[in-house]
Image (cartoon, rainbow, N blue to C red; front, side):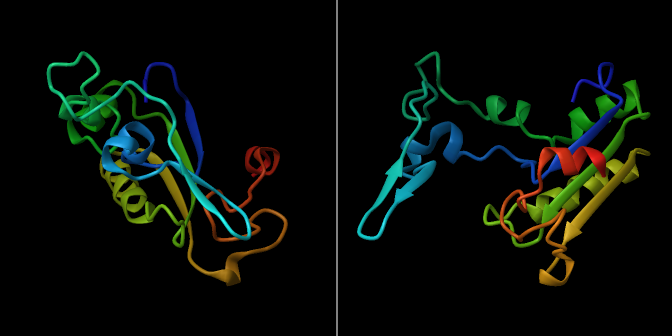
Length: 152
């Protein structure tokens, strides 16, 4: 986050660490998404130039490329906090998100709190927190509409 440009962040189920499937999924033999019907399941890859196959290529995905995309990079968080701690951070995240990113989100928000930010993580734990109007399920995004998110 560029702290000199931002007053607040509203997040719904955003990932904290880069999902490698979305960057170098083909190298990992892990599809980015699937199409399915009654009799088929087809894994799909987005064409990307990033690779981990050959270090000599200009699009080799280095460890540095990973770290610059990681919100849990402690040195970046420290720099961000030294520039501006007056950023309000609010996030909604399902504990049952199929991407298994809730633990990373909890770690990030603990770091934000320790750095002095006004940070609130609404971790949706189970079906009892589904109200049908704002939170509709426990999947990624919880089917929260943008309109409802910004009203909240």
